Length: 229
Image 1 (tube, rainbow, N blue to C red):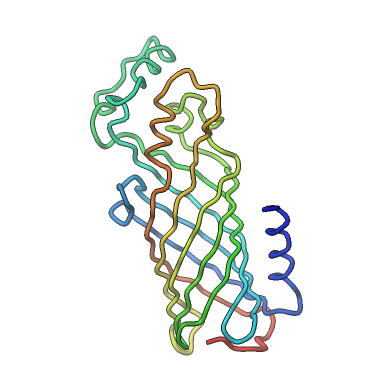
Image 2: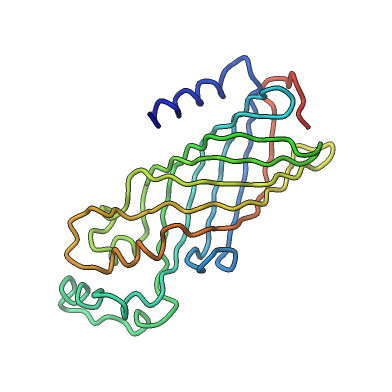
């Protein structure tokens, strides 16, 4: 049912009879802008396609490239990671900084399809809600080395919610974005793990709210029939 709904919304939103807008956006969030400070940094570059519904709403979809960076602290002392490292690296000694804050950053790359709606609040401000379907692409060295099954520990498909306010600059295609995204549950829960620390990391990453700011540059590919500005 979820897949059918996504396909239907994509067809409606990208309809040639609607307004197609190309948007190149860059959003950035930082560690102190996230609850629990688990997200060290989150970067996304995206394109949006929009179809006006009346004068108040846009249906939206698009394609996004996302690269969140997570910082999980104190996971050694609270799990059996030390034993995992000793078993998988018998000739190496676990470095001291694994026992304190400031451990390696876990970086992920996703291609995402957002589905959502925009609503005009006042002439130069809109509120946007979108539901993101995230396809996992790759993880950095920390993901490959320090999760028990490496990249196989990561969900291939994950989902998250995003809410944003958009402030338009008069007589310009630029807009300021201020928003918040709920991060998905990145790590597989039903994999055949022999150690508990991967589940501990998953619990610390799940459901983090990340606040971000961004700038979008837009261009109408088809002349706007109904302005909602």
